[in-house]
Amino acid sequence: QVQLVESGGGLVQPGGSLRLSCVASGSIFAIYTMAWYRQAPGNEREWVASVDSGTGTKYAESVKGRFTISRDYPKNTVYLQMNSLKPEDTAVYFCKAHLSANWGTPGDYWGQGTQVTVSS
Image (cartoon, rainbow, N blue to C red; front, top):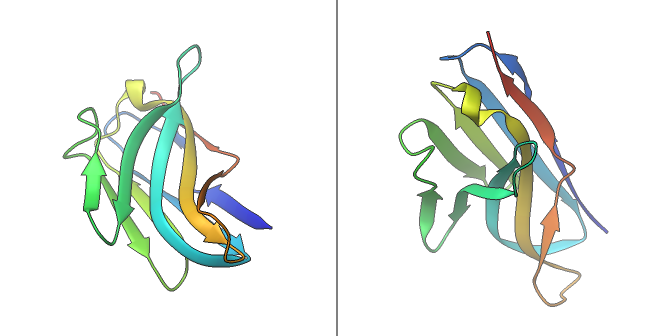
């Protein structure tokens, strides 16, 4: 069993900052990529940023220069530092890990999501 648990969401004013965390736990053999996605009401889920040891970090154009993704490999944790937040960043943010569990075939695992609301 593998679990991803996000935390750190909340209500913040425009221009403010939040830091999201996501911890992966369970019978994990190896984690290859960790990423953040978000889904606003009425919209499809969209990719925000990702990090892995091979290709480094990547960002969607809409968050480049404002968000920073980082990873603590020993702790199986990924972070998303979000600065200069805008109302259009309001969404449920999901963590995804591409990993192998119990020496099995790699697959995608998702967290339950954490709400981020940017409003004055």
